[in-house]
Length: 227
Image (cartoon, rainbow, N blue to C red; front, side):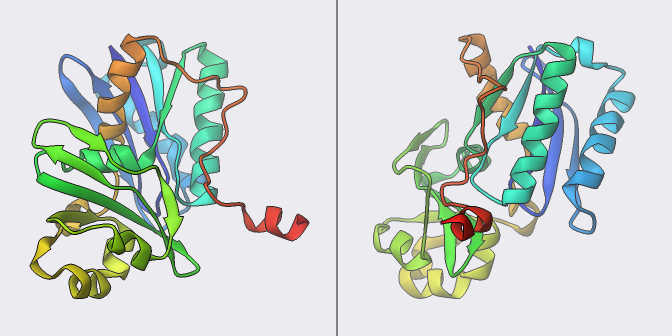
């Protein structure tokens, strides 16, 4: 199966063409300088142009649905919906935190992806890894970093903008039990969204693009103001 994967939950986004039998066909990161709304579609066009494929060649679209940047999630979802509507291709949506955690599947221990949620909070989840697969231990959540750390005692790999922002606090709490991802892997990749989406698509576990909404976890500023 071939999928076009989209991941825009953080400041640095990513798009990927992925083949279940061949692996990554092409992948592009969306830089921080321009908004995802300006770079996402051109990057998708670039993928197809350089791979020699077209939208007709893919089997489905896969998407990191959040949590993360409200604006980034809206851009990613609206783009995925538009492509689904125009091509009739099905959609698989999954947790951006889970896909991010899978980037570190070869790490043996706990994995804690952290996205900076501002307001002194992080989007977080905790997974365990046996170097072959990951297992979810907590739901996706938004909370102060202190709450995340209070539930962790074992050796843990941290990654993401939240890990960068709260590195000092993490080290203070866990010492040498805290392991940090290299800078090159501190943002989520669309290719891992694709890897986790493939088995869901093979089982026919697709999302309804009409009713699908971003996984915000907490209300937006507009919703808060409306009360």
